[in-house]
Image 1 (spheres, helix red, strand yellow):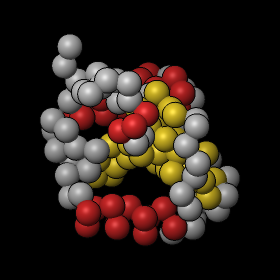
Image 2 (image 1 turned 90 degrees about the horizontal axis):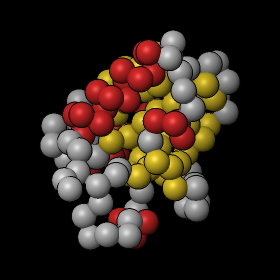
Image 3 (image 1 turned 135 degrees about the vertical axis):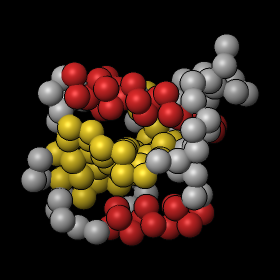
Length: 122
């Protein structure tokens, strides 16, 4: 079984968020086939949480079918630029990445597989 493309994963995620009354925006469109996906979840005017690709060691098989994510940062200030600065570094390293912003809608766990064992990298 082959892995879903990044474009399809992002399209399904944003469609589901809109269907459940939330807001989703593609802040950066990456490589259609296999661009790394980062997800910025805004929690109203309270905080922002960044999720990114899980480490390859979290996959049981050599080529995983399901994309897995891990929490990279959580900031209590919705206007803090720490996540924006982090994403600028990520873009320099990987210009093919996707950045999707979500606000409202279903919980992140209902949209993508989250690895909870990884520690945060602030």
